[in-house]
Amino acid sequence: MAARSTVEVTNSVERQDEMGEFELGDKVLHPIYGAGTLVSIEKRGQDGTISDYYVIELLQGKGRLLTPVGKSEELGIRKPVDKADRRGLAKVFSGRPRKLSEDYRKRRIVIDQRLREGSFVEVGRVVRDLSWVESQGRSTTGDRRMLQRAKSLLAKELAASDGVSEEEALDRIVAALERRPAASGGESG
Image (cartoon, rainbow, N blue to C red):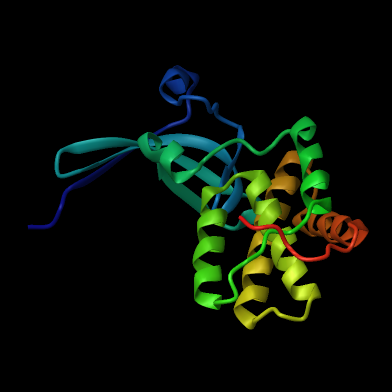
C-alpha cells in the first residue's frame, strides 16, 4: 500500500513560536546548499506522522529547500554571519595555513567534515588552507574542486549577509586572499 502524505502550508505569524530562532523572512544558511530566505513552514505527514518543515527559497532563484524543523540545528541551518563577526575572516586569511595530509583521500575526508560543520570561520580556514596548497603547486583536481566549493559557500554567506551578488562576494574573497602575506609552511591541525 502506498504511503499517505499530507501537506499543510503556513506562513502566518501565529506559527512564529514553533520556529525556534528563525522568523519568516530571515536569511538562513544551509552548509551544503548555501543561503536562502525562510518563506514558510509546512506540516507534512506520512504514515500518520506529522512533522514541521522549514521552506527555504534559495537565493538567486536556485529552487526551494525543505528542511525538518526538528533537525535544523543538527543539519547546521543557521543565520548568516553578521558584519561584526566577519572581521575574523581577515584574521583567518592572514593566519598560517593548517598542514593538510599528503594523502588526497584523507585530506578530502577532513575537508569535507570541516565544510559540513558549516561554521563561517571553518569554511574560511578551508579556503585559506586549500589556497595555500594551490599556491604551492601541490593541488589535485579534487583539491581545486573543494576549493571552489568552499569559496562558493563562503561567497553565498557573504552575499546573504551584505545583500550583494555571489559574484561580488567571490571577488571580495579573492581580493582578500591576494592581500594575505605568503605563508611559509603550515601549522598542524
